[in-house]
Amino acid sequence: MATYGALATGLLLVMAASLTLGYRIYSLDQVARALFAFDGTETSVIIANLRLPRAVVAPMVGAALGIAGVLVQTLSRNRIASPDTLGLNAGASLSVVMASSVVGVSSLMGLSLAAALGALLAALLVFGIAATAGGLSPLRIVLVGVTFAGLGHSVVEVVLTTNEAQMQQLLFWLSGAFVDRPLALAANGAPFMAAGALIALVLSRALDALQADDSTAASLGVPLFLVRGAAFLSVSLLTGASVAMAGPVGFVGLVVPHAARRLVGLRHSRQIVAAALIGAVYTTAADVAARFVIYPVEAPVGAVTAVVGGVVLFVLLRRRAA
Image 1: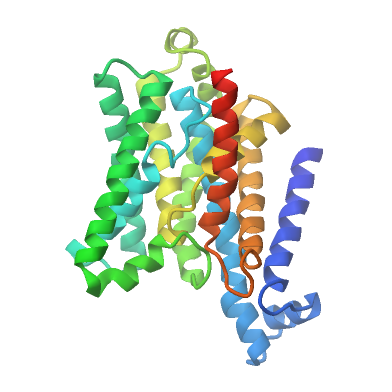
Image 2 (image 1 turned 45 degrees about the vertical axis):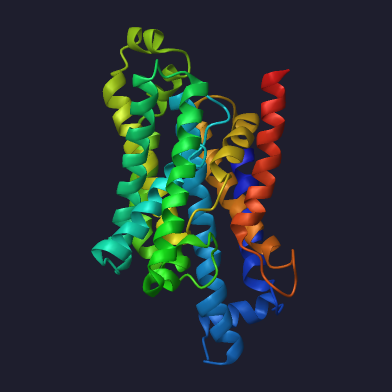
């Protein structure tokens, strides 16, 4: 409980930093007045309409991607797997692009549903191809996922290039940032994230058994097909909602599960809660850091998380090769 308390305290601190720090620095008194006694001044408008949404969206996205990362690494039995390396972010991004540019979907809820469906289809495709190519080995799953991710991002670039009318709207989703995201995105994404997190918690005991191998899990009475299907659904909801809210914020699902296991161990009931809190702290802190990396210009938060995630991935690969 002390660990969870420390993480929750850290989350409150980085959320306070998100509200106060940026191109302009505000005091906590100014934040409190803007949130609880809005007076229409420039300071109140910036805090309530610009800073508050990103202080809410950032931890929601981080928590969702952290949980999704735990599930993906357990399902693939691969510690370097994540929604990014398995192509789930690319599938969600591609689905959003196609729904907007081809079908004409423009509503927040419609794009959220498209992102969740894209992540689900990407998960089924990656694991299906890996299974038919010789079995679900950890390396094969990652190779198929990385290949699909590259293909998906290439198609997205082609669509953006050939559809200039939709380019500006689509870049809003695909920039991988929390700036200029309205609170309506959080309201629309919250049910999907809550459903995905609830499914993950319900599956926690079965996922503990899946960490070994299929035969061991089956001998313990785990319905493998049902558990995997539900876990894929959870990952799709969490990843899809995250992409719909903030675009593809990379490598969060890779870094966070490792930190969660170090802090609370291998039991998924603990891992999932810890990953949600760590992910929330991580993305919110990255969002604050992105405001100062190339100050006074703001960097995409996806670039910050990608740099950290890339270093972590390199270290993990070196350890596996050693």
